[in-house]
Structure formats: C-alpha cells, structure tokens
Length: 113
Image 1: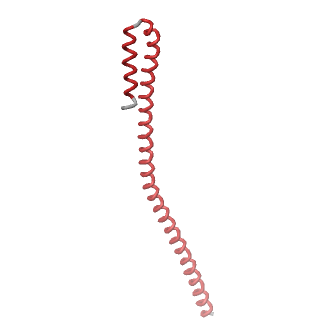
Image 2: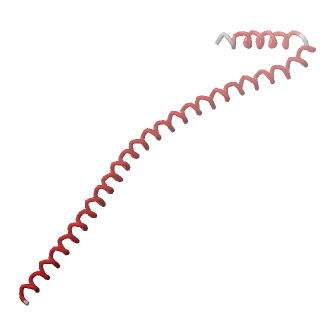
Image 3: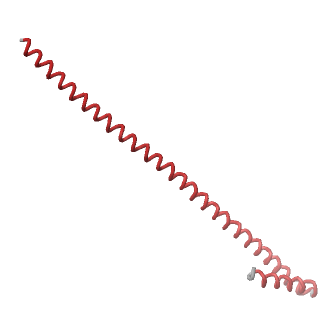
C-alpha cells in the first residue's frame, strides 16, 4: 500500500488541476488516462501472477498424485516380474520332470528287454 499512496496523491493533484485550469486539462487528461490504464495493467499483472501461482500449485498436486500412481505402477511391475520368474521356474521344473520321466521310461524299457 505505501507504493500506491504517492500514486493516489498524484492522481488527486491531477484531478484538482484538471478542474482548476483549462490548459492543465489538456495536458492532464492523457496523463490521467495513461495512469488509469497503468493501474489497470498492474491489476491484470497481479491477477496473472496469482493464476500462475495457482497453476503451479495444481501442477505440483497432480505430480504428487501421479507419483502415487507411479508407485502403484512400480509395485504392479514388480509383481509382474515376480510372476514371470515363477512361471519360468515352473517351466524348468516341468522340463526336469519330463526328463526324469523319459529316463524312467528308458530304464523300464531296458529292464523289459
């Protein structure tokens, strides 16, 4: 607010001068218009800054939420890897059982001869 105080004093002085002298009216009018448009520009800039801050905060919240999803995805991927590892072990066991069964069959055939 201390920054705006001199601006408002200047605006009040310009308004007083605008009413007092016609010549100042011609000079002060463009300055007043420029000052008011500058104030409106500052207000818009402040609004944009607040919106950018909100957007950044929302983005961080989304990233945090995605991070949670990411940990879920990591856990899911780990479970898939464990499943694939277990399936590979089962296949290996089936192969060993199949080899043992073939050996048993060969031994039976040799004994029958």
